[in-house]
Amino acid sequence: MPRRLGPGFISTLLDLLNSEPDAPADNPVTPRPAWWKEAVFYQIYPRSFGKNGTSCVLRGILSKLDYLRDLGVDAVWLSPVYDSPNDDNGYDIRDYYKILPEFGAMEDMDALIAGLHERGMKLVMDLVVNHTSDEHPWFKAALRDEKSPYRDFYFFRKSGGRPPNNWTSFFSGPAWNYYPKQDVWALHLFSKKQMDLNWECPALREEIYKMVRWWLAKGVDGFRLDVINYISKTPGLKNGDPFIGSLLTYTGIEHYFYGPKLHEYLKELRAKAFDPYNAFSVGETPGIGVRTGRLLTDDYRHELDLIFIFDHLVSPGHTRFDNHRYSKSYLKRFYQTHLNADLGHGWNTLFFNNHDNPRMASKIDPEGKYTAPLTKLLAVLQLTLRGTPFLYQGDEAAVCNVKFASIDEITDVESRGLYAELIKTMPPDKAFKQILAGTRDHARAPIDWEEHERQRNTEDSVWRFYRDLIILRRSSRALIYGELEFQRPHDKKILCYTRCLGNECFYIEANLSHDKGRCKAKPDMVLLFGNYGKTASKVLRPYEARVYKIAISN
Ligand code: NOJ
Image 1: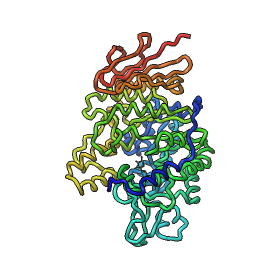
Image 2: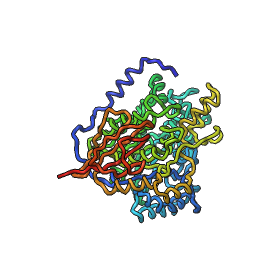
Image 3: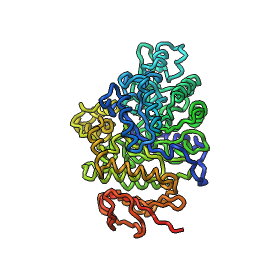
Image 4: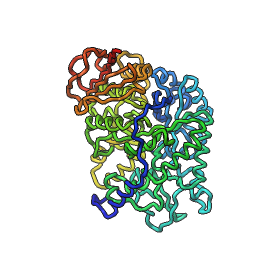
């Protein structure tokens, strides 16, 4: 792909810049309380969470609810459990109303919902509505028959022997699949079996709202919305600018990552499906910046409650598959920029891991020399910065990347597709190194329950540290709603801030480096938590993080 600035580049850029007439509100307000601002979420990736000696995965999750409650979890986000051929582990849904037989039956799902609610916990399911599986009956009918009422649910194009445009797929190769029997192409931004839905079609949107309401009526408390910022594509599906494509890795992305009707669709989805149930939403929004993020989440706009922004998961100028050392000073910059922009209309998510990324602790410290203090430091940030913490399974037991020995051990569709591409131009061992740097399989290894339970029963473990911090967060309004003020803003290594509300105030210092740093806590501050124990010295050790209470005199 050319790394040259072509004639379309400037106009594409201007189109993008001019496409948003709105600006986020700039007056600071006191955030409105909401259960999901106070809650600690925990993501379960069912396939690797396991059956835990029960008859199916959903029962296996049910058997672990007391474990989660004990840890302090308030809400579970469950990655897809719907019927699916599993080309992308459930993110390719064949039937929105059915459970994947391998995971259980609808009765098991009902039991899980009830089990969570009995314990005062909520359930957030995954909503994958940018695409369906090519085995979904809608797609099958639409492909079979041009006149099918479902034809307009997808993007079908007749364009002879060439794909209708130059867009590339996130999982390598062109974003179009050709069906020779019907002589037609269909759009898939992800795998060849994940067919993009056409949100322009009102009947499709109504089907989606109906399905969302069906699950909410069952008792589900909300949804995590998969790649939800991709649902509006620029009409005409024009070619992507090759220069932008080479910068952003995917050609065509400027035509859908913040499409012209995104806000309209989100407002409609909320009004017609979420609001009647007062349901919660968190959108997965790759590529969305701080300001546009606020336009999606500020509460007066009635779109999404929260979004996941991923900029902090790789260092600037790199992609997930670049084998690079993570820049910790960037983590500090990210939070300072991102959280300072929060004026109280919206709210943030705080997370380091999910099922799509290698483990953060391994990015920062690949040798694993500081795993325990480092994972505890991440816990401190997650539970004391301003936003809603989303733990990913394994965080509480300091799980790190897997030591894969060969490409044969990698099963993920994205990694396998990329590897096949890479070996066209580089030796297999070099290609494997790139895969190792970014493969999602790192996060998808089966949970080692023995180790998790061992840590649960061990003082000073990462597990206990998470639990105790969650207890602290729950007992303090200041750690949830309090003002966040960054201190020592120019110190590259030490992330330092206060959280204050009324006369409750905390001071947090986190050394983001494996070098020593200086502690600037005042003598009258009381050390509550430290990942090196409760002895406060003037020196911050590698990845040392401390939480102090500040005494406030009236
Ligand atoms: C984002 C999901 O988190 C990821 O696992 C999936 O492959 C893509 N969306 C496509 O659904």
